[in-house]
Length: 67
Image 1 (cartoon, one colour):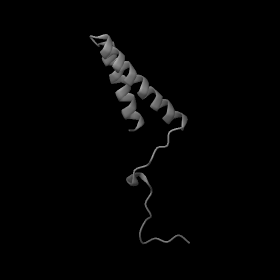
Image 2: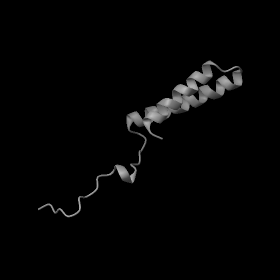
Image 3: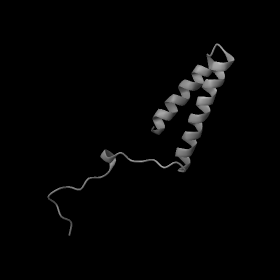
Image 4: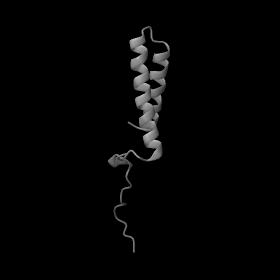
């Protein structure tokens, strides 16, 4: 999950906690928001290893040779 997805899910969880009708639902959504916040912090601090998708890696140009 990338940083944008984590931010989105965090905001959704915060909003759902704020509008929850029961204490149990509020607690659950706050817990999800806290988990997303920890993952965001880990990504921002560099302590979480992020794998790059193969399509994001530079590809060699065929037919050219560097000398």
